[in-house]
Amino acid sequence: MDVVISPMPHTAAERAGARVAEAIAANPLLVLGVATGSSPLGVYAHVRERIERHGLDVSGITCFALDEYVGLPEDHPQSYHQVIRQTVTEPWGLRADQVHVPAGTTGDPRQAALDYERDIREAGGVGLQLVGIGGNGHIGFNEPGSSLGSRTRIKTLHPRTREDNARFFGGDMDAVPIHCITQGIATILDAGHVLMIASGAGKADAVAKMVEGPVSSACPASALQLHPHTEVFIDDAAAAGLLHRDYYDFAVANADSVPGA
Ligand code: GLP
Image (cartoon, rainbow, N blue to C red; front, side, top):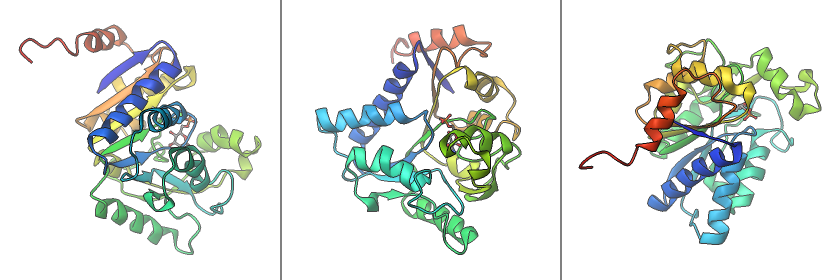
């Protein structure tokens, strides 16, 4: 993993946002995996600026969201259909048909999960996947104990996740749905390039386990250690638990100084 530590959250978001913009510029037909949560918002804002000020062309990209609540109407303000519409689709000026989110309100969510996995495959797979991390180490909604070989499926949300996300539901944990459809860990690992973005002291423990802990379903994000191209963009506070922090800084400072390269 390449761990890039920035002094402030907005610097981490700008660096990750620059990566996304570069990837779109290099491949205008990019299949981009997008995430919900507060962590990627600065990344989306940076890409929007590239679109508006620098003419970045996003008309050919396709987006796939990581997850969706089961049973929350698509027009509910906290459904991930709405969240992605408001944070990505509309600000970037994408057409609705460019953006896919798992269908959490069909009569058959299990089939919807299988269909979503197939849709990703038929789109050629995700080229660049943006992910955040839950306080308990989840990625997407792959909660602790998730199979590292999992594919898009229904999961039961962890009480910690429902507690963390209650802030989006008027502080009422009981209003947070119990089930979700999430891309699996193996689905996420299929992406060509993974960008993790996290900030704040509340993520420090999960980030340390993800980067330096054993690969274990106890911390689903640790599975990213198995991915050949994961970049982790974090701020100082989220880096607080890393044992080898100095080394990561040194590696970033020397990234472009390989003799003969
Ligand atoms: C949510 C999402 C994840 C997200 C995580 C962290 O539950 N399903 O994809 O990464 O929680 O959210 P935040 O960035 O707001 O801390």
